[in-house]
Image 1 (cartoon, chains in turn green, purple):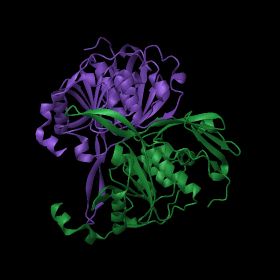
Image 2: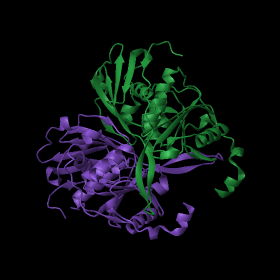
Image 3: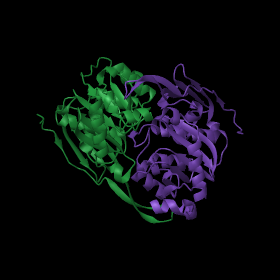
Amino acid sequence: MTSTSLYLTQASAPLTHAVEVMNEFGEKYELAIPSERALTVYVDKRELITLMTLGARPEWLVLGYLLNQRLVSGLDDIESITVDWEVGAAAVKTRSGVADLEQKTARRVVTTGCGQGSVFGDMMDGLEQLTLPDTRITQGQLYSIVNAIRLQQSVYKTAGSVHGCALFDGEELLLFVEDVGRHNAIDTIAGWMALNGKQSAGKVLYTTGRLTSEMVVKAAQMGIAVAVSRSGMTQMGHAVAQRLGLCAIGRATNKRFVCFSAMDRFELQPELAGLNLRAAA
Amino acid sequence: MTSTSLYLTQASAPLTHAVEVMNEFGEKYELAIPSERALTVYVDKRELITLMTLGARPEWLVLGYLLNQRLVSGLDDIESITVDWEVGAAAVKTRSGVADLEQKTARRVVTTGCGQGSVFGDMMDGLEQLTLPDTRITQGQLYSIVNAIRLQQSVYKTAGSVHGCALFDGEELLLFVEDVGRHNAIDTIAGWMALNGKQSAGKVLYTTGRLTSEMVVKAAQMGIAVAVSRSGMTQMGHAVAQRLGLCAIGRATNKRFVCFSAMDRFELQPELAGLNLRAAA
């Protein structure tokens, strides 16, 4: 699909782990909880960061992380990503190094979400010129997306405590990814998109987690103009979405939702919402 | 309550923010979403970190953050914490500086949870010698805690998209804190405990969020031996709780829960669980 000769390992690992628990009746039994692994990323033998991950698709995760952090600009910058769970390491070999690695990773911010982000001013750096594609979504497509997620087999259903992210083309599910942090899940999607040469036009991002500023920024960096969440939105996420014209839809369950921003991208079909629901609302 | 002359501002700020949304019927109205503010922490005029916060109790948050990160060892190290929302800054003035500030904040890890943490080995540094107090919890106390949280007025109920943390002494609610990140909420509790000279023995931490490794580590650092969550647990959170003998209770809703670790701290009263629930289980 791609023209590069990027080498990736395929180091997946068990996604759940059984532990003994005791319930309210004093009954002891085994319960599955999500795996959580430390994956330290080395770029050209220099330690960059440690990601805590479920471990389903570590190579896509590392690639997407590097892309979303703007540490590399594309697949051509990378020669190989080698993940070894024995030592919890992802070795990234670049073709010609990463310029200003120190400077690019200097600022430390504790964000709302699961991981690293940056504050509004920094976040908007390089995004002000960003033009999102003319992606639109109909109410019918939104309902199909929510339904597809409902039917999806998942670690969440068996073990809980993970976030899911999915990429849709219109209402067609392309990829569903779970991780212990929702940032990892979206980074994994970014890696997969790059590897498969997917264009961002027409794509819709779904997340089980909140639409925080970092999630909105990551979606925008990936060129995705519509983001849907089962959960809500924080103030800075809203501010960024409004500024970028990204259509953020939250609280999407069954037939209900709210559209927070860029409402012109959303095609209402209120007749699909159902009269019974309206009466109950 | 304390013997120090620590000066704190009291810079709270509105916790919600109204935005215009559109629902599934095309109706537009105002909806409250949680506020989210960037608070950059300066220690003796050096920029340390930027926290994204709801902004309810920024001084307690900054104090608890410094304590939980082991950047200061107690109130006596600090002369003042001055928060100014106009510039989004918290100025911390120490009495005699922070030794090795650079080194202590050098390692960057993207953790599962909302913010900064560290991997297992690093996390366990300085915790191996930690002895948690002989805190126990009865099933009746657990049910009282879950019920108290259910009745609590909250930003979550009006605006969603925040995490809540609470500190209990047995079943008595001492403090309930919400924030856009659950790490901020627990740090705020740590700050409040220090300011009010609260001992950790007998205390129970409640969180709406998952019990990840960082949450377990923070609770342990605060000397809290019992942690309760509405949500579940990740593998590394479980590993840390087992190692430290911290009683982690998850999926706590109504009469149901699972005890994940240090079950000897939990006093079963299965008769309180109710026969009807058992039949339905």
